[in-house]
Image (cartoon, rainbow, N blue to C red; front, side):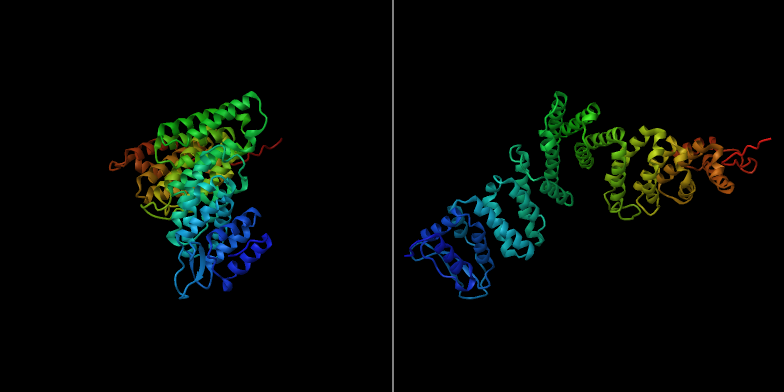
Length: 506
């Protein structure tokens, strides 16, 4: 019977006889094994014990695993056949449970996950899955550990087997972020990192739900919530919390109502909106813009328009960056939309409302708007996206036509080509509508930016559609009739107006 004389002896015993693979020996007393580990736990030797368990799993000399010894105790014994598969049996988990150390379980799991990231393998993955399944509730008591564990697990690349553990960890994080007490002291940088990792996996419903909860967390529990506030600020943050929590509802009317309330709240308390809150609101509205229910996403469109109304300098660049960046992922296709173009169309709707509200002030933002739209007016892109871009250009031309003056030829040429050759009815209509607003906005000054021959070509194509008895598209004909009213005087007769009038002195 092994006599327990000192902690030093115990530590040496574990290191020499258990950790080093070549000198593994049996301990036939379960009680002694348990006492050894209990003392190591007491002395906070969690690192040493985690290394032992990891070596037990990764031992190049395969082990049968934990087995009952002759006296009913626990033993570690080498396999007779070196190629025999490692058996992660129930005794190992029973042993961990009986040690009753949450810190040890956490330390062991962390070691296993880090090893799995460096050297993927199904033997270790199976163990990590079992650890998370069996001891998941213990992790909830250590929010920051669970946060970092989740970030690491989302990086595991072990084929489909890793999906099970990712789903479990996402479920645990969802429980944690649903509890106000659990998230009070979370490390902000880790939360941001987890949010970024989830953004690349938002097709998964669990990831989408957790992403939403994290957005709510940022608006509800960040440091600015804990600052000393006036009564007005307290009322604002109280309403803000309620709105953000309601956005997590499964009920469509509740989510739509929360967006509507949030829009009114932002308008009412504009001067209390700090940049951090503003950006989180922006992310939240973008998230709900992807909602499948039109009742929700239309409210999200209005919310984004409200942000651009109140904070144009900060939000307009961000929303156009989002609009442009998403188009990079849209594959060129004639009629099949392989990209996420529905999301871009909805972004386009919010931008359309923004441009209409800006009116002539849109000229101040045209340098950030035009490059994106000019990239999109390409007949090889999906028709819905081209129509969206043309509609935005029409809105700009209607509000402030001369803001397009430096690109007027390229835009007009694209419209004329579409009217002549495009078979898609939406693009053809949008092109006619844009030409109508250009002619109306520029008037006779059109000759200062387009040559006479090209204006004559525009004239002829509009008149042809207007007078064509076989034109079946009544909306296209309507745009042509209106555009014909804005065609300037005959370019052959009308003199070209100079951009600068020189006044001669007598």
